[in-house]
Image 1 (cartoon, rainbow, N blue to C red):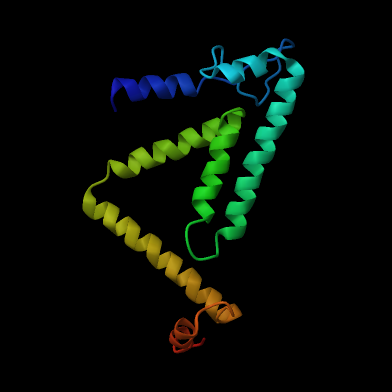
Image 2 (image 1 turned 180 degrees about the vertical axis):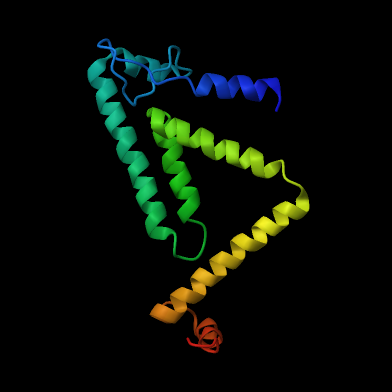
Length: 159
């Protein structure tokens, strides 16, 4: 691991900030915010509270949307959940730590050899296919499927 990655991980995994009473809380309080508009919001406690509630609601919206669109065809699911997590990580320490964990896992995956990555993808898509087949066995072919796809899927054993 390079020195810059170690340094960024060390800075990002510092303990959560403390309130004046010394108790931990879950909010990110960077000493120097990189965006001027957010520095201005942080100066007013009322605006900061409203901003953090808005961030929480926006993150929740994308996570919920990701959960709803996950089973549907096309992109949705995981990218939307990660977007919601990224929104949350701008203000909440627990989400920031979780995002750092996801990034560390991605770097770990990228360090694997190509054959090992290919095997991992093969296992992943096989599991997705088995989940999809299980869905078809339990619930049948969805009514919104095109007729050609419906005919093809009904030829699978047990569907």
